[in-house]
Amino acid sequence: MIDYHPYDVRISGETDINARNITRIEESCQGKTTLRFVTMGDSQRWYDETEDFVNEINKREDIDFVIHGGDMSDFGLTDEFLMQRDIMNRLNVPYVVLIGNHDCLGTGEETFKAVFGMTNFSFIAGNVKFVCLNTNALEYDYSEPVPDFTFMEQEQSSRREEFDKTVVCMHVQPFSSVFNNNVANIFEYYVLQYPGIQFCTAAHNHGFSDEELFDDGMHYIVSDCMKSRTYLLFTINEEGYEYELVKY
Image (cartoon, rainbow, N blue to C red; front, side):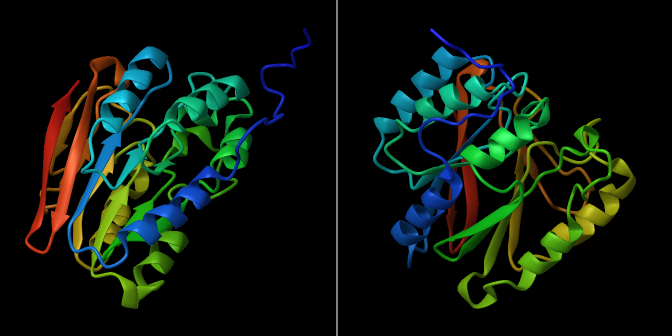
């Protein structure tokens, strides 16, 4: 009968989810030359649709892992993260979560770090490194770098012998109002330095898109919100990559 303040960061249940699932992803994908993974995003208001998404993914046997592109919460409330976590935990495959701009509201960043982990992280699946970034600059006061170019530069060489392709993932892409567009061109420069860079993923826009934002051949592929009942299914192999917009 007792409830805490909605921004009181008291965590019940599983924590440090990204690290646990990264271990699962790296172990299960070791040695693979073909990866199939799903990107989705912005589930903050659409709990039923997210439950249906999980059920649809669980019907498939051809997916290695899922990347949630951020905005699990709407207001940064602790219970929002925990409810979304419990839904996503029903997936039969491992998943990781990026931090979205709504996830930074109130004490949301603190809760995100407790439940999921660091806001910049990476993992290697098969021969592909996935660099996952916090790009929600509008939600910060320059107390920390967003995006973090030091982290991006380090990830170009860290564990270099284990990968020859790269995918960069974020919640908000360059030229969004939430992105620090004063450094958009510098950000793109760092993206292009990654070995075998394939494409970038994002969410946030509540609509699907595939654009070359800088007219340099780099595609920024954006997942729709869960309201639209769609996800993106990517395949990366030795020949390159392809993806499909799947409706459920």
